[in-house]
Image (tube, helix red, strand yellow):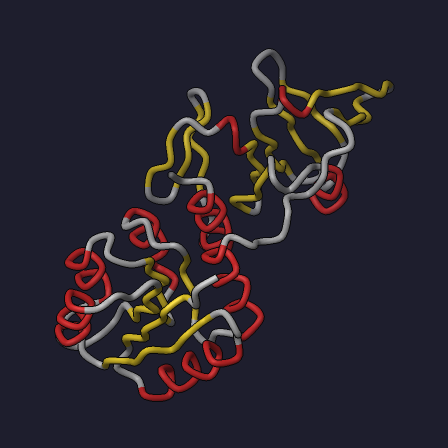
Length: 231
């Protein structure tokens, strides 16, 4: 396999140095250079082959958002920034990932493995149902029927197309029983079924007629999971 040709665009020398070090640690990545100005980066990309661009968002001449818009789909883009409010914009621009500074090598490696196409396999499913205790009985619920789960103090409300089931349970105990490739926590009070999503809009998702908020601390992981499934 040919090495993935990587370039870094950032107005902070230390940020460039760290990413260059990370790139050089991975045998199938190749560091081809860096720029501290978006205009120079665009000119280089237009004349050369770049596979993967690590792009800072806040820069003095052109922002990373503007650079990404101007280069279109000439290369894969991973945004790097110290600010998490740009996650939705990154998703809309079809960035492959969104890395928050300071970037750990572990998080960097997970991101580039996604580009390589060698991410870890999805969690294996053993069952398509869970048993939950409600009132004085134990009820079987098919995972494919669950639309979302809402936290309500000491209770959880499991919502399906036909009923709402209240259980005395916490997310910390229920979540390990749900396959992570099918369910995602998007807010401290909500877990949603990914295949039940109808619309994603800024900081909320729509499932049937219900709009569900996306919490700031859950936004990056959720949007990265959605981006991985976007064609």
